[in-house]
Image (tube, rainbow, N blue to C red; front, side, top):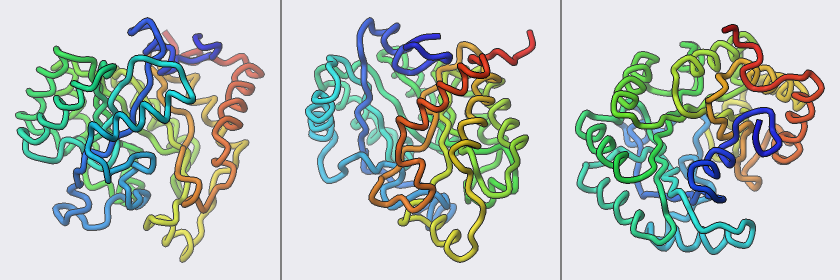
Length: 305
């Protein structure tokens, strides 16, 4: 459909919007999470490591210095003049509004930054913060990322998500009401979830009429409670072929205009325990492309009009 792919990629979508290559800068905003500070739980979601999913950030630096460092590193890989500041680590709306404003607005002053991506939880979006995000959305390119992971109650409790599906639904409603783009995360391969369960989650997300989706293959990092749970009571992990087959199926049921931001997990290789196949991201992506071609599948091909 674009980038030579049979699905809508973030890279092609940003090129279309900004007329050139635009890349994300992964940032640590120095925030915590209600699932870690004792408000909901003290150890976070079961798959979340010590860096709060920000393994590629550098929280020792201030935000501006982080941005310049990322630009310097990524410029060796890609030629780009435009950047999205991605607040990745932990919960990036979990603070007083005046502090959030300082973080967001200071980073927008860095030359070349043309937008913000804010990773957060649906239960950390007060009306005050939502209204501010609505204003910010009129000033810059903005999207908000929500880690739903699954729609199934048993899995929700297993991963210690700490909020129910109706909280996610309300957040989607409130964000869309303010014309804010939303990206939802889904984990593929949670213990005890069937193929049908996973497809139900992705179909649910697709029908929310949001801007984007991130698919994460379940991987186990050594700094997580998931690792300890797996060591104590091993469960079956999805192999590469099964993951590729399922990802192909998911793409076929996602709406045509939904931007696919990610198709596999991308953890810290030094901390990864299993599955080892997830280390080779490019191999997984090329296998998905090959599977789509062999089946003659493309995004939305199985959606009945």
